[in-house]
Length: 412
Image (cartoon, rainbow, N blue to C red; front, side, top):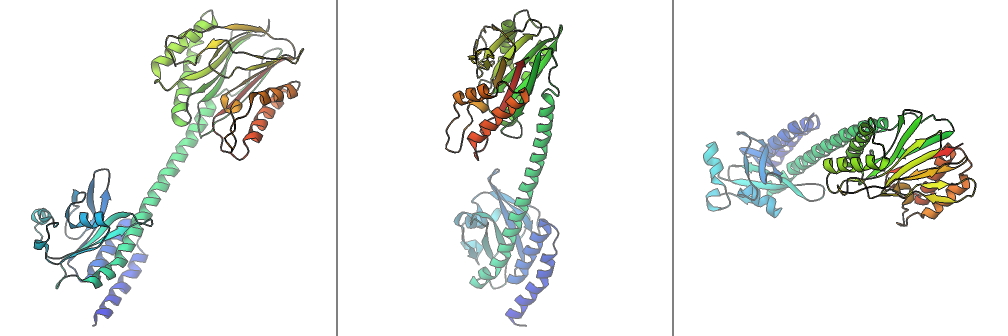
């Protein structure tokens, strides 16, 4: 049998088996077997780079268990570093040869061929090594085993891509669960108080976000409501948002006489359980429908707009202080407003007032004020829809940059 016939038979024998391999491990084992048989070598191994451990290790190795050596060590390390094939037919003459591996395994290595395994982007991800070919290796073996090296690199990259895809799938599933949980943390029904109507909307920029609003019923048909915005976005902001909401509800079980005292105490609590870069703006209000008096504290949030039906004038509710959790010693001030029939209160997070378009221009709050004046006589549902639609129209195709939350209250 000629050399060409032998090579053809080996390729034909392994082609069907490689095509039917069910997993990456079996495929790499077949590639190592094929490389050994193509070159007529005694053994073959496939090595991978472990950048975290700063090692190279054998994914497949004939005749031995898994081997691990430091990066850049031995002929395999030299091949990976140089991204070039190495042929050594007398290991005793090459100082790069790592003799201690033979000492440990009891195997005697005379000749070595090592080829780099290159990913689709040309990056070296490992190496294929053949050992002890009678008569030694030459360039024809390098050319021949490039086929097996290419198969191996493709299999390894495919395995990595599948693993990454599965990680992404699991992460998306967990984020969907987190989104569902966070949505359930928001009020599931709106307050029903005589002479007042409410509507609210919250859309996170990511799967989950740091904006929140809440309504807490108090004795005597009174109401406490909040709109907050935790610094940052995503999971970290969502966790702090849930903690803050729980803390607020806990404090409302035995609220102090003054709303400012409640926020003072709440600020200390948030400061104690959050890090220096995590804080929250907060607008909170205590509403007595019978007198239509609203007491409020604005802790660093976008000052809500109060549209007066009688005059068309818009007041900004900015009395309060800095965001909660930012400075543990902060003290807050409260203020009061008297609501009249037709007045509309528009509370919003900066995801609305600072909506950003593709040109990185920021929406002007004056335009939001004009929107409010134009739809102030409409229902609370229509007001919310108009505000969100206007913000979306401004941003256009740009990705939503921040969580967007709106709470509207109207005195009838």
